[in-house]
Image (tube, rainbow, N blue to C red; front, side, top):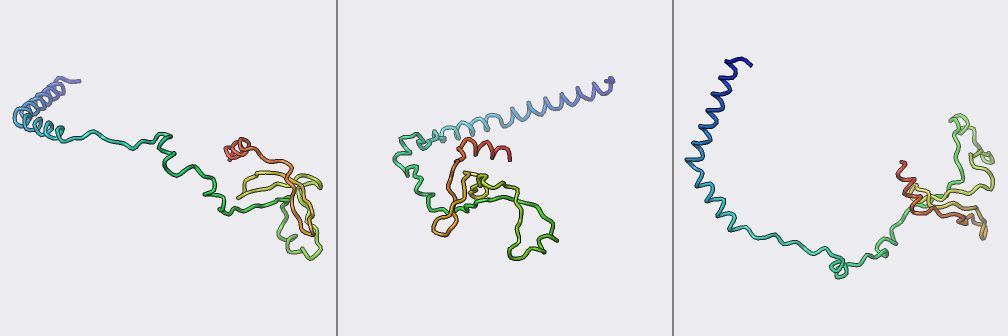
Length: 147
């Protein structure tokens, strides 16, 4: 740093020191009295009690609130990828080969998430699925974290 730059910085520091001293002498007592007056008007904060005892007095955690919410249940027999020209050739009686093997468990999805697997059954001339394996909540969370 040159001597000229050092002198300029010293002059600037002196100017700031003089300005701060002047502002402190002129209005410092007024500001301090205003702050003290405002501090006398301040009341301590009060917060609601969020303890478990407070929760018991309010609405209980009740699963019945969500039992009537509709969800989409899907049973997936299998999937395949075929060209559009083959789709246009499909007719009544055509067979589409899926990636699932015969006798393999079918996936049961709720809103697109796997929750169980099962086997296809026929009851009173209607298809159904007998659940053979339920996905545990920890497994569902693990699969969701991979997305």
